[in-house]
Length: 344
Length: 290
Image (cartoon, rainbow over all chains, first blue to last red; front, side, top):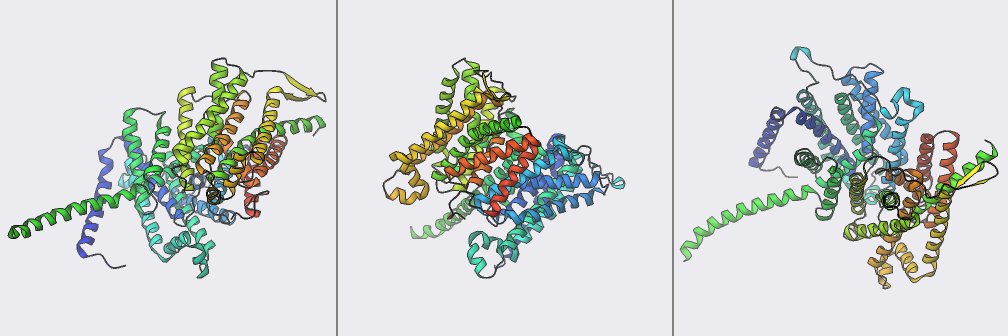
C-alpha cells in the first residue's frame, strides 16, 4: 500500500484531533440521562466492533450477547465473591469470556453457515439456562441475577467519582479506544488478512497451508474477549446483571447495528450503532412511542436489508464521491470559463 | 416411576410431539423450498394463538371456526412474508433470515399493542377428558391437537407424493434451478410452501391456545424447540422433522417429569449440539449437505 500524500495525512490527523476533542467535550453538553445513554453507547461500540472481527471470517454468531454476559457475570462474580479489585475483575470477566469461547470453539467451529448460526444460538441458550438454573442460584442468582456488584473504585485525590456517568464515560472512552486500536491493528495485520482469506476462499487458504480452524478459533476468542470486556464495563456501571439482559433481544440489537451499519469496513458497525442509538433516544423518545420501538426497529431492519444491503457505510463513499464530483465540476467550470473565453 | 405415571408421561409426550411436529414441518418446508430459515416461525405460531384469543374468546365465534380462521390468517401472513421479504431477497439467504427477524419484532409489537403484554387465558371449548387405566388422563383439547397433527401431516404427505403441485414442490426443494428449467414456477412454488408452512404453525398455535395461555413473547421458546428439532432431524428432511419431534418431545417430557423443566431444556439443547458435532446433517438428513 502506498503512503497517502502529506496533505491527506494532515487532514486525517486534524480529523482525529477534532473527533477526540468532540468526544471529550460531549458529556458536558448533555443531560444526566443522556450521559448515561452515552456510556451505554460507548460500551455498545466496543460490543459491535468485536462482533465485526468475528464476521471477518464469514461466520455470523448468535451467541455474542451471551458472551458479553459471560464477561459481565465473570466480572461481577470476581469482584463480589472473590473480592478482587474491580479493574482486575473486569479483566477476569473478559478472560472468562475468551476462555468459554475457546472451549465452545471446539464443537461450534466444526460447523459453518446456518449450522454455525444455529449451533451458536443453542450454545448461548444453554449458558443462559445455566445462569437461570435453580440448582446454581447460590452462584449466579437464578433469573434475578446478581445484584449489588461493587462499583468501580473512586479516585479520591483527583475527585473522580465513577457514579457520575460523565466520569464513567471517560473511563469507557479510554478502554474502548484502546480496544478499538487493538482490534484495528489485528485486522490490518497478517492475521486479519488471513481472516479475510478464510472468508472468501477457505479451501484455497487451506491449500496454501493456512490452518483455518486455528484462525477461526483465534477470531472467535479475540472477539469474545472484547465482548466480555464490554460486558464487564456494563456490569460494573449498572451494578446488576441478569440472564434476560443478554437474551435474544440484545443479540437482535447487535445484529441490527451491524447490518444497518454494514460490516465491510471498520467504521460500518460503529456508524450503525451511533445512528440507531441517536434515532432511538432522540427521535423515538421525542415521539413518545415506547411500546412501538421494537416494531420500528424491525421495520428499519427490513428496509435496510431490502434497500441498503451493504449498510450505511456504503453511503459514505457515495457522499464522498458526490462531494468530490461537485468540487471537480466547480473546478472544471472555472477552468472551462477560462479556456472557453478565448475560443469565443 | 409407577406404571400410571409412565403412561401419563407417554400421553403428554405424544401431545407435545404433535404440535412440535406441526411447527417443525412447516419450518423445514420453507427452508427446503426457499433456502431461508424463517426466524419468525415462532411468531406465526403466536399469531395463530391470538387469532383464537380474538375470535373465540373475544367475539364468541365457535372454536373450530376460529381455528380455521387462524389457519387462513397465518397462511396469508406467510404470503405477505414471501412477497415482501423473501422474494426480493431470494439470492441472499442470510438477508432473508435477518428480514424475518425484523418481521418477528413487528409481529411481537402488534401483539403487545393489540392484546397487552400479559398472558391471555382462553377457556377451553370442552372440559371433557378421557380417563383410561384409572388415572391416566387425556383431555379432549389435547386429543384435538394430536388428531389434527396426524390428519394434517398425512394430508401434506399425500399432497407432496400424489399431486402435481407436490411434485413441483419437492423438485424445487431438491434443486431450484433444475426445477425452473423443467418449467416449474419458482415463485408459485415458494408461495405454496410459504402458505402451507405458515398455516401449519398457525393451526398449532390456534389449537394449543386454550392450553398454553398466549403471550406476545411465546414464540421464543417455540422457535428454539423448532430449531432443535430441525437440526436433529436434518434440515430439509420432512420425515426427519416428524421423527425428531417425537424423539425430542419424549426426551423433554420425561426429563421434565423426572427432574425439572430447566434441565430438560438444557438436555434438549445438548442433544442438538451433540447431533451437530457427530452428524451435522442430522440423524435422518441427506448426506450431501455440508
